[in-house]
Image (cartoon, rainbow, N blue to C red; front, side):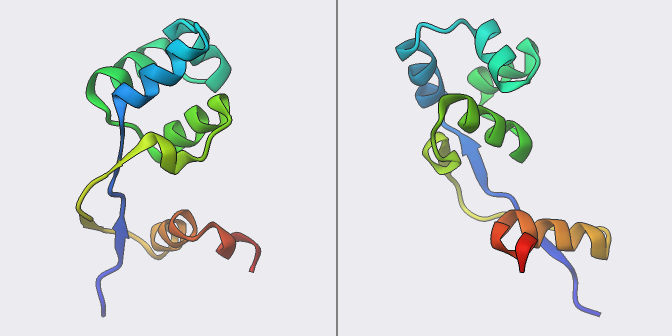
Length: 101
C-alpha cells in the first residue's frame, strides 16, 4: 500500500502580519477578536510565524487578503497522513476546488 502524504509547507511572515495590523492601527487583541482567534495565538504567530491552516485562513479573512500573501514559502515537508480521511482532508486543503467536484 502506498503511504498517504500531506504537505503543509507554509509559514506566516510575521513582519508582514504585523505590518498589516499596524496599517489598520489594530491591537493584537482587536485582531484576535476580528479573526476569531485567541490573543495568545495571535501573539505566538507574530513571534514565531507558526500557524495552523485554520489560523492562516482566519487571519487572511480578517485582513481581506489572500492567504498566500501572508505566508513565507518554505521547502515542502511531507508527513504521513494517518488515515484515508486525513488524506482526503489534505487533498481538499491543497486543492479547495475538490470540495465541490
